[in-house]
Image (cartoon, rainbow, N blue to C red; front, side, top):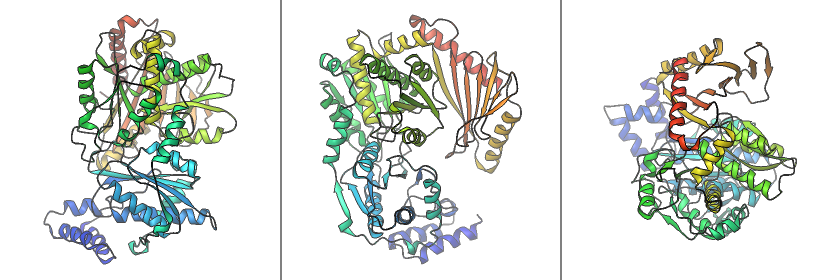
Length: 578
């Protein structure tokens, strides 16, 4: 968009019935000699994607503010009123610890109520999975949580949910996007709150949600005997502090320690660079406290408490961070082992993972004779699978490599609160067996093979960068590699074309998956490489998964890990990524 069009758009906002403070902010941007701030704020509309909104807070069409949130809510309200004519429609609204989240949640409630919709608004900040639980509990048609997950402090977001408590899926997501995009005049947003339609909710939902999580327990006797497992927990200034310590206490754990410096919700996230439990830096304070008190387990959740990262003591008695695939594999193994021990496996159970998540989970499921289904990346696809199989099969658990897991189906999004409870129980179970969680992971590798996964991202900015990413994907499609890491490529799966090709015969078969710009290469020795352009950032992601040939020796973990890391580097060279 050229500068004159940007200025015209800013002037249109000034002409609308917006607040005087908002107008002043726009006037200041218009008056500056450097147009960078004005350009960034107005060069496009903040896109309401299939998951909602996410962006930097501030005034402008490309920012998170009263008017972009109002527009999103008005569009969602319009869709709900068209979808359920003549019905009493209700929604649930929650928010995290980010700056302005409380105000944005109230604003969202105001617009819904102004459009005749009943709103269950959380009185205080709460985890995203509890929003999903509330949608289902109250029989709502939709839900919204104000959060930008693990993004930097300048960001906020708006995640929209459907009647099943899952993030919006087709065709509803595209239909809502259409309604939001149809709003071109800010004056058509109805901000006139109907206070009688807004109902405050809080601790009564906490109680129900916590009871549901406690109902997932498979080893209460192990907790009784190992209640003194020392657990360090950090909410990284987020919503996890509202429920995780209480859940662990009610489960029976007596030695739970919060990281005090990170226990107070704070949208500035003052003790970390990024509030992301995938980043080792974010767990620095938790690991220090763990060493100080000789703890057994470290857990940390992101600001909206839907993802969790953990650290366990390794064979050198030092804390080691586990990646999302390792934690997910531990959880699935523990769940299926206990279901088997308790004679709960009847033949119609299943687990779910995303296509870029470790194949170790599929191997574990096959051993316990439980189906393992793959979905596209994104937890809404796991929720879709649960919805489609409801009444036919029993969902045990699922997860994705990016630190998101779900146990049971009373929530339909990744749930770090329930995951923390189950990880802690798993630690008690391991203690009863005379093991640490690290040793339990080593046992899994010894039984099923040593899998190692890494992720690499290549950033390509601007229009030229986007074209370069498209070119890379096209070249991989036209000329897939014949070998990777010294092993023949035996299968190529193209999720955009909907085809899986046997490379030895050249024969292709249709796959039953939604179309997505993802390519996967499978080798004879068990390696898997996935290439996927990011839908939200100017980058292409490569997911590498390799498996050690021969028997795994738990006493040589570090040596064998280095061996697999070298293999991944060879694969990167084969793909010309180094």
